[in-house]
Length: 289
Image: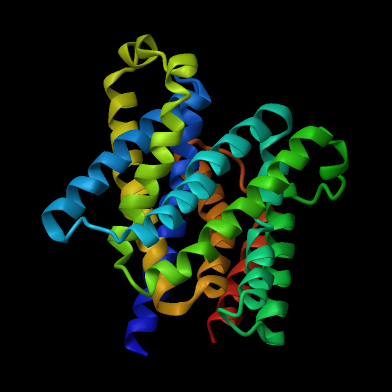
């Protein structure tokens, strides 16, 4: 039971990290293109993870699991990041934020379908309630925001949401045989190798050369915390408390993003966002019981 409580605390830390990272990415996109930023984050992050794995554990993985880890990296790193980035290109960040957060709904049903977890009524209620909280928080009371979004961008965001759910669910059998660090390191390395094929077309070293010292500090912290630490803790959560319970903590990310934007960027915090955030935390509390 104590171990489960620790998992809940660490997953809440992941939500804080990814929430603050959204503000960091917003800052970095003033100087870097989206795909260039993804390449730098994940290729560098995978190298750091593999270095940690080399010093802390045995790096070897049975050949029967290598293709599964490669598939995991392709789904959760390469393809997910591709769909997510181009969704942002074609539709609003609000629409992407709402639709991406449908992944706990997909994840709950897929986890039940694959026989990993029993999808109890209480958790169904918590997941749907949490999504309602996300919708209220993201739209700030503007209920028709999705209808005004570009259809292509919305579809890409829905695919990205499904890919993130699959990414989390597919890790479950691997985490029964390997440590969270090993699964994180190998899957991210596989996904980064696939992303590497985009380097000739998208990587621009000149952009990095123009980054200020503040920009470099932000990108280094983003790589360490958002890519290395948070992904490891995410997999640890899946291994300890299951996929659907882990995924509901994704709802907390926009809450902490809104708070970070308020304190760091001086953005307005609307009353509807406070209501949405309260609903989200209540839904997480219900899901973890």
